[in-house]
Length: 475
Image 1 (cartoon, rainbow, N blue to C red):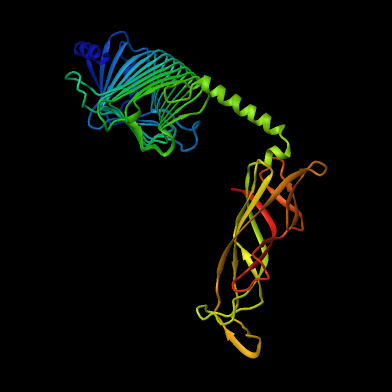
Image 2: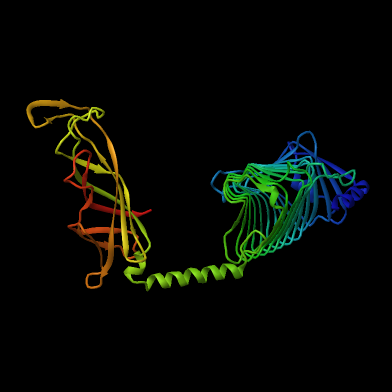
């Protein structure tokens, strides 16, 4: 690892001490011989922008809570000032707090930057590697509360995030934490990103990989992974590759989203409990065991196109045959009880009352027959009626609700002249107009009646007549 070389070089280097309350960190570094190994220990808060350029091997060690601070103007990137910029250099930092402005740390121009037990907080962006640079973030480092991206790599750069592992590889040792950022890590434009035992938590989006990049997100501990993002856990898109062997859980959106020309490998039982799909394939070219194959996707699309073409060329009869539609009706009923039926609560004869009808169904069969099923709800009112034909004898009853099922059917056909559906039964004819796709039917004329029972027979409610006036959406 780079810090092993640096530590060896630092043993031979002369250590310089800088007090940022009285001296400029940038000016003091500029006095050093840039071709040899140098160690600078500093105290206080160093005002940014601090620029380090052309240093072959520089170690910066913060003492007693030392910090480097940029200028942060919320919502105004041009007015913000980066805290630390490293160009064409090899720099290692330990035990420093960086208060971000535009960037906290901008590592560029083929630089190698190592952060060990460093806190980078606030600002628009946290830390970034650009221009074929390498950024190592180690140990108890924290990248937190950036408005936009916490960690970023672009311009064919590399980012590694690991525990310190000073005593050798320890699978249980936690590494850095990336939290509270708009995006935890954003990797793009031919760059590489790897994290081991890193916790990405409470970011807007956990990790974004786009435009020809590779990311490897590993963990040996179940509690370390990509969790509790307000949006998606991990996004992989635009010809990128991701290997995800960590828990991806508790995110508000999808667990892992796979986009255009991108490939994902993951352990499915690690990706669960997210607000959206655990694996969301957003493009037909997404390639993963968790996505439909391109061949099956193309076949599905072709089948849909064939179905649409067939539907577009279908006749009205073909569009409505076999469908079931919801029906509402209004109407009236006639019926009576025999006088003297002592077990009945009311004696009715020749009573005619309006009734409402609950939703029923109209089914147009493929064989040219149809059926209507309705449940009539009749509400007799309390009233007095003649008893036995003797004038002046009255019996009063209480309000009753009686649900009576009606089944009625006939044949249907299509009038090619008017492009209307015609329902024909013994009770008459009803003509319907269909919507273009046959999903909605509307009554345009009606002399049909639905009749149940024989009005000449008394002794029970015996005749119900319904006018079908509303035919609505299908079931």
